[in-house]
Length: 115
Length: 113
Image (cartoon, rainbow over all chains, first blue to last red; front, side):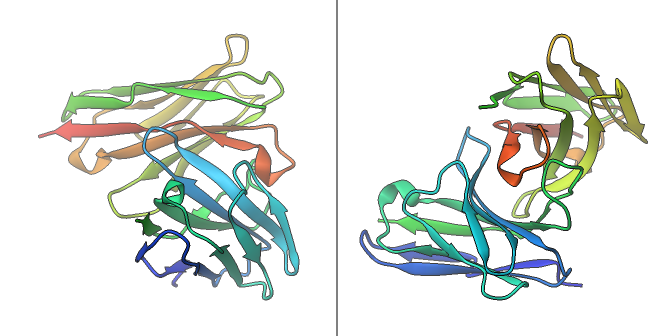
């Protein structure tokens, strides 16, 4: 049972480059999320999706785009990477909306460094 | 919006001692308070949660208490073991929307053998 899988786990980019992080879940969850984790700041929601074909902005959406073309996949894109986007990115999924006793299942994270 | 403050940022205890991590929240409408544990190199994992209609909840060596009046909640770990060493995050939510779950900044707990 793989749960939530993120690829890649590590990536180094130069300023201005683009990249996509892929998240896949095998639990048939409706809801998926992308968070970033920075030292001393906890987890902050970037974008989320409540179902296939839908996305919505979270707390810190600027500079990121997402797509949910298939129920099991949630992609996070950086069109023009900036050093401020250096972070650890976590994907999560849940079968209910997070916060309504909807346990979040997290992937192992993707560490992104922008030079 | 909601603001969740978590203290302390680091905590070291001797194996077998108790550990307490405290969080305060700002929005009195928040009604759901989960705690997540993040081991090194892993994603966070839910360990316990509590709703606003309950004052305390226990699960073996861990317990969470909630004081709605003071708007704070705490995680208590008794008889700590080395495998309890991890980063712990509290969170608060009003429910109903994914964007309404706000995390604290985390506490690095180290259990010394």
